[in-house]
Amino acid sequence: MAGYVVLGAQWGDEGKGKAIDLLADRADAVVRSQGGNNAGHTVVVNGEKFILHLLPSGVLSEKADCFIGNGVVVDPKVLKKEIETLKVKGGRTNHIYISDRAHVILPYHIEIDGILEEEKGENKIGTTKRGIGPCYMDKYGRIGIRMGDLKDRAHFESKIKLALNEKALRFPNHKFSLELVMSEYDAYISEIKPRIIDTIPVIHKLMREDKLILLEGAQATMLDIDFGTYPYVTSSNPTVGSAMCGSGVNPFFIKKVIGVSKAYVTRVGEGSFPTELFNETGSHIQNIGREFGSTTGRPRRCGWLDMVALKYAVSLNGITDIIITKLDVLSGISEIKVCVAYELNGVQIDYVPALMEEFTSAKAIYQTFTGWNEDISQIREFDKLPVNAQNYMLAVEKMAGSKISMISVGPDRHQNIMREALI
Ligand code: IMP
Image 1 (cartoon, rainbow, N blue to C red):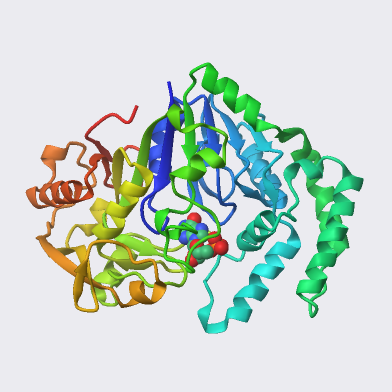
Image 2: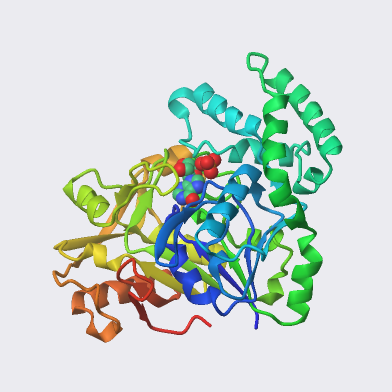
């Protein structure tokens, strides 16, 4: 038994839920370690689909305990709602725990997210407006409020008063309401309080007992605050380091890092991506792939697979296994392109430039593959795929420098081609 990390290798929405589905039933614990309810994953309980934003999708596992780790930013109102939804749908909820070190998203963080986006005007990030950035700002400014602070009402209220004084200085034109914070608190606290624990000793005990811990990433490598396309990124580190920093699991416990990538690229929100398609093929991929954000409903921008970014993700995260999702969406496209390098100021480069100005002017250099017409959604063996689809996957694998262990060919949990067992 060991730790398995599942993370996004592109700009998010890669379909991490597929991998988690396969692993969660074997896991003893499922842990989320960064981000907040800016994420969105569709889950199915008793045949009924719904979207979770904060709870990991592994929460549906029959046996695993579910932890929201110290690195997550938690909106307790959303947490309560998701727990209630699970209850209504007949799901298990008595196994959900939240780290007392996790930071709390409060109503003023959500308001500030909107204010900051407005201040930026044309340069807005296109955030999910869930208060993620402002909550992490308080965390790193060392003025944040943590889940442990919620346990005592009077203590919490005194901390909120201090926080609101600070916000009033920073945003003099806005009035933030103490009453709103406290009335929301009174509505969620009885559901949340018994679940707030020090998760670290519990997770360390699981490690000592050699249990299987599944670390479920949110967002993705290219949205990483350090390694992503800054400033058009989220405010946490969706790369592998957070799986440790945000949970208390140590790196020697990790057996596999599973990186999930679509067979093409999508992105929500602002910020350039060099392989973006502005033509009919882009619209075709958007329609066939149903590329609309599960958190905000925004249409996702679509483009060709970017190997510079995928190779970067493999190196940064130590990805041992790649899962390619949505290969079926490319059926019927006669020529499939893959970006193999960028051209920057007349020079060919094979890395992701740090400066946004450089990244924006980087032009994709493509290799073209012949496509296939067959519907591949019912295929379960690699050798049965059309030869052109096989060639495409083998070339991607070679360029990525890490094996493709699974290929997903449809939304259903069984629509997968397994090339190598994940556990
Ligand atoms: P924030 O995380 O709400 O601050 O948004 C920052 C950027 O990350 C925006 O471009 C969002 O669209 C993007 N983003 C945040 N979470 C996700 C996600 O789960 N999937 C895809 N994009 C995301």
